[in-house]
Image (cartoon, rainbow, N blue to C red; front, side, top):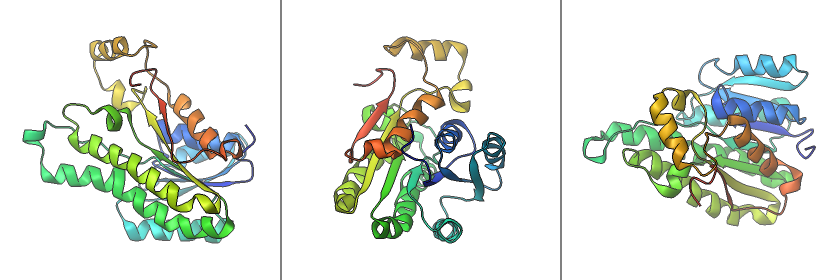
Length: 246
């Protein structure tokens, strides 16, 4: 897909799992990737991208630091002159049954998964509107659509991203800026690998395609929504879940 060639893409949470796959996919399709993650954790994926002939840079970023986000976006604009694509991928989970959930775990998940998206979108929106082009893709979750016991904080944050996506899409559509979301189901990442083999098998049995998804399959959906080929799609949630939730 050539619809991102020459574009500049900022990807949060780019150091591993889905974020790493998204960064690699965008870079392999010709985008310059600004890979943001805590400390220097995105360095490995940047080295990998550069080793394959792609263009990328690592930016240390804690997405709960609003001033840090503003500075990171300003820096990327200063170095590249534009940001065409924003992928809000950074996320955390702190699971617990509602009766036992601590307020700090609620706050931490909402701050990382939802409030950070607000801050990054607000930071990139003015230059996107000015250049009359932009692609924003928010990574939500099947849990934000269907719910899941023990994940009230995570489900609320991811459901919030859906509403956020639709509202912002309505606001900026006239300037050729699209805003969409991708909702992964159960994906083979470090988080799911921590599950027991029996638990993984049990979840896989509930999925119509009878397997976990891969980060690359999620990245392919993001790449499409970030591309010129998706120019007439906005305010949508693209589910990548093997039929787990329909």
